Length: 318
Length: 282
Ligand SMILES: [Zn+2]
Image 1 (spheres, rainbow over the protein chains, first blue to last red):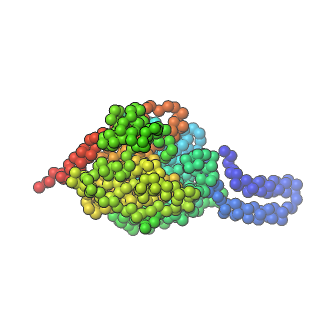
Image 2 (image 1 turned 60 degrees about the vertical axis):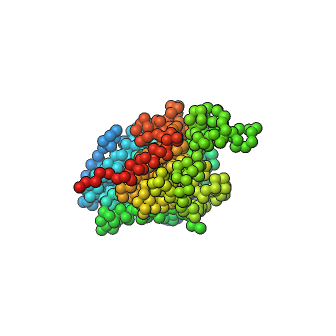
Image 3 (image 1 turned 135 degrees about the vertical axis):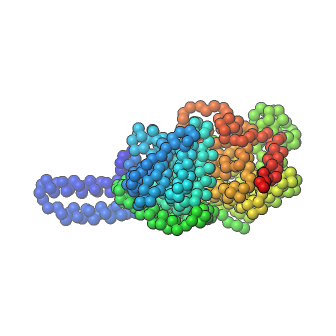
């Protein structure tokens, strides 16, 4: 997969042309300022029109970009003194889910998130961010620990889904996910979940029972991957693009469906273009949200979370 | 949460050609041919090999609850088409006609050997028992009713997972149902989850797995990911008993497997043991 995505190719080409012109201008020592300015204006218009009109499938590509920032990158950019804590105390330590304690604006918080790798080697170690049951059990253990010490919990969602494997099934992924859902319901501390990449299915929602749920502008959150949906619904996995549209999986879709509380804007062209700046947008969102949630006591937080999910669903009563 | 791969290629209804329709049934497991009437008398369990045929929600009501005690709830909740998904409305109306149900779960009040309970019974004949907004809402309302009446909840699961055509709204029903059951649990009330063939995906990974007691019928396929999805991922053959109830029991994921001839009595006994209450400290 190249670093540039198909839909943004015109922008890339124009940018290259401008760079080329600048080089020529310098080397030949001729004044091409007005030509360059003209092209730069065109570039910004082109960027506007391309990035402001991203189709669902374009967003899927950005969400899956190999350079897309991971949970750990955001933690490092946002927090001080992150200390990772490992293991579910029963079976093992799942590297596809990362958790620990950090200082967020001087406030101790527990952070839990899916963790992809950036290199092939790290991806193999982290199972491409697809957790086994012990990953969810670790996540829940750390959330309970946070509750005991009255720390707010921040969850980052970034997975294609829980891993579909033989060993996983032997250890009860269903129970691990279901238990996390129902226990998160009664946490007496604030919980914020943010979808930063792909939010795939049950494996994603297990970190999503929060008081506030946000999505990055180009992230996706869905019951199944577009390709999976296409292969089940139309028996053709290559119809992912069509499924991405039909399934309504983008941040604007979910906001419209009242499933999420807000959208965190992304750097033009995607979060990977400026991790530090993207992290500052996320930090701002968490900071404001925590301040609002900190005024609620444990009982109110449980009630708030309950009300949020109780009303999701569309049907008619006749 | 692949639905398609969960359902065996074997002909489930087992109707044989050349005989008056419905008179005899062939077991898909052992090929034994038996009178349908005999099979029904045996609670749809093969008289030769013990294969548990799928039951419709109505058949479960008749089999499980005290005669005439069932009062259905929330049948007025109707599926809409929140994502404007092509053909969805038509598919739902076909399923309604085929099953006589309003959606893939039947919920209501009833008594089990005299004990008042709330039941939710899923029916895999309705869109493979998939869970969309109405299924999630009906189960949630049923649990709310149980909290109000302070009675146990018993859920029979039979589902391929979340309903694709309602997208993220289906996924969110996992949370809604699990959270409501947690409320029920916090009230000190009993939830018995009975998993029947098949129980997968978003149903298995939500309410079906958080029973105080998790029970399954023999040989039921129960899992998170479908067998075919796993085989494609691993490129290896899975053992024959993979994801069967006996496999889950062996891996510590079930409290018990009850044969259908015992299920009703055993569950009734469990309910009585709970409604009797615990030790009274003085
Ligand atoms: Zn048989």
